[in-house]
Every structure is written in structure tokens, then in C-alpha cells.
Amino acid sequence: MTATATQPQSSLPLYVDLDGTLIKTDLLLESLLLLLKKNPFYVFTLPFWLLAGRARFKAKIAARVSVSYEMLPLNSEFLSFLRSEKTKGRHLVLISASNENMVAACAHNLDLFDKAVGSDYHTNLKANAKLQRINEMNANAPFAYAGNASADLPIWQQAQEIIRVNCSNSLAQDLAANKPRQDFDMPGSRWPLLWQAMRPHQWLKNGLLFIPLLLAHQLDDMHALQHAAIGFLCFCLLASSVYLINDLLDLEADRRHTNKCSRPLAAGALPIQHGAAAAVVLFTAALLLAHLQPLAFVEALGTYWLLTLCYSFLLKRIFLLDLFSLASLYTLRLIAGAGAGSVVASPWLLAFSMALFFGLGAVKRVTELVNKGELETERIDSEQEASFTLPGRAYSSQHRELLIRLGTAASAIAVLVFLLYIYAEETMALYSSPLILWPIVGLLGLILFRVWRFAITGKLHEDPVLFAISDHPSQIATALMFLVLWLAI
Image (cartoon, rainbow, N blue to C red; front, side, top):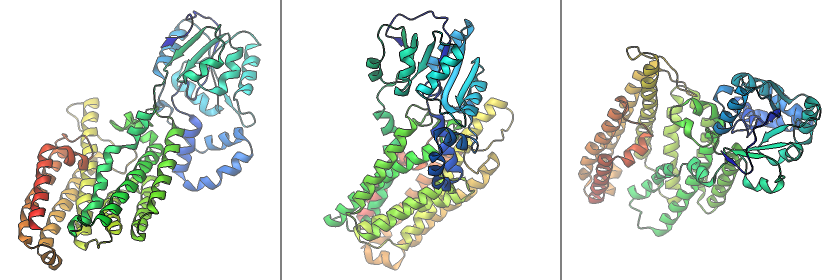
């Protein structure tokens, strides 16, 4: 906490804004995302609701969604200050432009405020309308106000005490310098948070676009390689856009997750509107770059995007179908790479990809179940087996053994497909010594065995694909596989 004037020891009634001030996020945007996740077709209804006014718009959305108020990210410094003031007997009122039912639920969850006031069906309680309501409740007596945005300026101008929470320093010049003022939870630069939310480390997966060129022995074709590189950039931009959309739709589930709760959007460190705007910009940039590519690539990219949307809204919550979807998304990268380089994607390669990435998808779910199981068991009783369900997924602790069986079987099938590929007619035509490819079978099996062993024993704490890329023994095995492939060529 910082103060730009003498910190007051005030007994003035304190009126507290909700969105961005008490909580780091915005309830309207949160509830809007929940509504669209519940039924994407509401997007066609929303404009008609908005025509009736913002107050009715908020009321209609609030009536159709259920927000987990206990999971909303709070501005911790300011919350500590409020609790301290409450113990001193200070009169605290939560007043917000959010719908009155939501404001009341937030206040009830914290058990901190003497009164909670929000927008009703007729009045959007923002800016001057909020100031008028404060004056009515306070009988035009002096008051203190805590806010975070430019809409709070009219209220701050009349308030005797100014409290800024989670707002930019640029607002300081619009505030009277002679009033007591305190600052809490002031944000830093949000660019690093946006970069983190884009997950650039996941871009490594898009290296799959170069595999069809490699297997077709066309890496020396600079024209094909250039298109593959542009395709790689397209997928990086589009994938980051999709990651942001996923995070926006999974805010509540991520907040309940052991590791995902620290993601910038779920933690409230990155505003929802910033994440949404970035998703649109990245998607647009990917489309513009795609116009430089062959039609086959554009078709694969479009299919990838449609499947990711279906996955985000529906497929990720359907038992096993989510794993087939993940495997298909990886395989579409290979198809797109073949389209970009104008080569044919081998059926062997596509079959291998589906089996391999179905197995790795199962590894990811097993990892989440094992890690959550350890936490739940510790929380309940170290001698007792915990029963739980993964947030936002169709898997419970009872599915772990089934996923292990299905996933290890898929991994074994992937190794078998590669083994059969060695003796295929097209392989004999491509390689002068195809039998040299045999060591790849053992090296691939070694990597998959290592990944599964780490997952089952609870030593895997990340995406299995990224683990295989960053794990030193797996790196050595992968390098040896490419060496063997080069020798075979």
C-alpha cells in the first residue's frame, strides 16, 4: 500500500466499489462469459437486451448465470485495510454498477459490509447515478469513496477522502491534491502478463508443421520451407488466441485448479477485456498471414480453429472425446504442414500421430488426477483414498486406472505403427536403408515409458509434450532419433 497524502484516521462512512476495486475482475464480464459458455447462441440475443438499457441488460444476464463468488480474486491489500477498518467500527457500504443480486451475494460471502447496493432493473448505478445514490443514503453528509476507474471521478470529486485501488497512475492528475488519498494494490505493467497468457512455450508444438517436409525429404526446398515457416507463425498466433479464449471460458474451473489458478486471467492480474482484445488481434493477424499460404493449408487452419472452438465450448467436458479432439488438433498441425509445403501427408504419419497424442492426452489427465489426488488425500486423511472430480472435465478419481490402460495401449499402438511403417512400400522408396530406422522404435518407447512412469508416480507436473521437450534424457533420445533418421535418409 502506498499513500500520496497523509493517511487519514477517518470515521467517515466508506463507500466501496466492487468491480476492479474490491475484486480484481468485472462481474458483468464474468457473468457474460459464463452465459456464452452455457449457450453460445446467446450472442444473438445480447444486442436486443442491450437496446433495453444497461441496467436491464445486466439483470437479464444475472438471472441466467450462477457465479462462484467465493472464487473471485480479491485485491488483498485493500481487503486487509477494510477488515482493519471494520474492527474499528467504521461504516462500510458496498456500492456497484453490477446487478444488485450479485452485489448482495458478494457482500454476503465476505460478511464485511453493513449494506450492499447495486444496479436494479431500471437504474445503472454508475458515475453520476452512483454519486446521487450515495448522497441519498448519506443525507449529503461527508463520505469516503474507494474506486478504480475514470467512471469514479465524479464521486471522488465530492468525496472527502479518496481511496484508489488497482487503478492507473494517470488518474492522479484528475484528483484534488488537497484531499486525503490512499492507494492500494496498484498494478504494474500488464504486457508481461499478456505474454504469459499467450503461452509462447506452447509454440514448440507447432514445430510439427515441419515434420511432413522432413519425412518427404523436402527440407532443402526453400520455397516449401518458407511456406512452412509462415504456417508455423500462423499457428503460433492462432494457438495463443485460442489459449486466451480457453482461459476466458474456464475462469472458474482454473481458479479451482491446483496450478491453473495462477494464470493471469484466472488470478485477475490481467483484465478480462485485455485478454479478449488480444485474442481478437492475434486471430486477425493469423488470418492475414494465412492469405499468403496454399489453399490446403488454409483449409487445415480453418478446421483447426473450428475444432478448437468446439473443444473450448463443449468437447473438453465430454468423456474420452476430449482426448480424441486433442489428438486431432495435433494431427491437423501435420496436415497443415503438408499443405503448406505442398507434400502428401502419409497415412502412416497421421495414424501414428492420432495414437501418440491420444496417449499423451491420457497422460495429461492421469497427471492431473494423480496430483489432485495427492492434495485431496493430504487434506482429508493421509490414510484415506480421496474421491474427487477434475474441475471443468469429465474425469473423476475412479477413471484413473481406465485412463492408464487406454493411454498406455495408445502409446504402444503408436510404437507399433512406426514399426510397421519401416516395412511399408513407400518407406522402401524414400529411404536407402530403411532398416536403420529400427533404433527409433526403442528410443520412442523409452521416452513414452519415462513419461508414463513420471505421470503415474506423481512426478509429472506439466504438459507431457513439454516435459518430453525439456527433460534431458528425453532430449538425448529425441536427438538420437533425428540422427538415426538422417542416417537412414
